[in-house]
Length: 454
Image 1 (cartoon, rainbow, N blue to C red):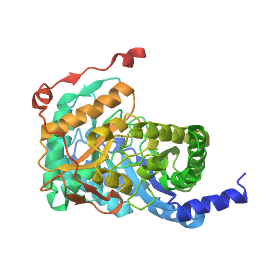
Image 2 (cartoon, one colour):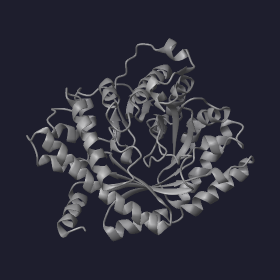
Image 3 (tube, rainbow, N blue to C red):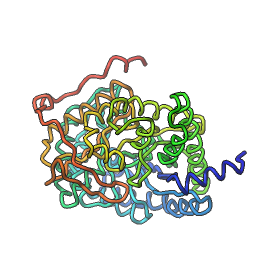
Image 4 (cartoon, helix red, strand yellow):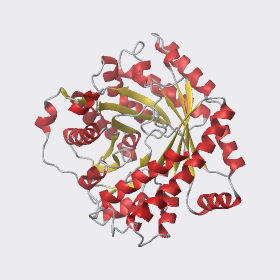
């Protein structure tokens, strides 16, 4: 039973410590929409989404009002469009037509993002998936609500270096297509190694082919709550520190479980998972970097940063697993630069570099996230950075991702502004030594030996 002290404590978390349900994401299968006729396919997609998701926003708002729990975003993920469009699409422009349809459906039901304009190319790439990838720059420039992701590798299959090389070029083209808005298209485009099927967070959300027809996934975030809790244990040893994070994560996840179950019941759609991810916002006090610095670091990026992040990530997962039987997605800690004021401050102070962030991705939930780089960065350099991050995920049997934003017309010392939850970011320095010949080899980096234990 929940007692009055827990109610008071939860209210304080919401009112003073930025606790919120970051997203209710409705996953929708589009497999039954497949048609060889593009117009019929688009009609089926629009009808399916607007029917299944018609009450999503209203339900989220009702729960927010009745339970006094902020539900920041209501979102949709769909079956990867590279699968759905294979029969009907014969050119990249055909895929752009689907993107426009998805955008219209998202606007009709009132969600802020729809994910799943995606291709699963971890081992190989079909001609249809190549066309979808080629369409991404145009698709993200002519839509407002669509997010795109591409799976480039996994522990069991290795890394598809042909797709990595292609994505280096696509990211650059997407930046150029949206150059007048600080290349914001790239903020809605992410590449993955070991992509999860049940991720509710954008830009990487898609409704996995192993999922049921529709499912409710909830993402909870509470860095401000963790920060507040750690302020009370300054100078204590690591056992106390770990226990404090774990207990706080438990409470946060219970809140997510409550909202997920309630949304599931009201919408008549099965509950999937709670993703407890400490995802920051640009708001002061809602920062992963601030938590790390409370642990005793002068600045995020100082020696000890990776160890501090390891403790935080592990205890968040331990607390969450005790609070819900269905924790999934990317649970842990996100370290997006543009969305975390503390990270931005660390970059500006010279404490945090891309190389240090890469080391931290061995520990965190995802990877190199929302990092603005010079607009003149070569496509092969971008591909090389992606390959490094995919290798970390493949070798460590974890999800890793890259969301780089080459901001056209800007260089180190400049700032890119994206707005809203996407925030703003200083342009970070990139190693400019060439990897052209490495990327040009093509083919696939083989899976590591531990993938064969099955």
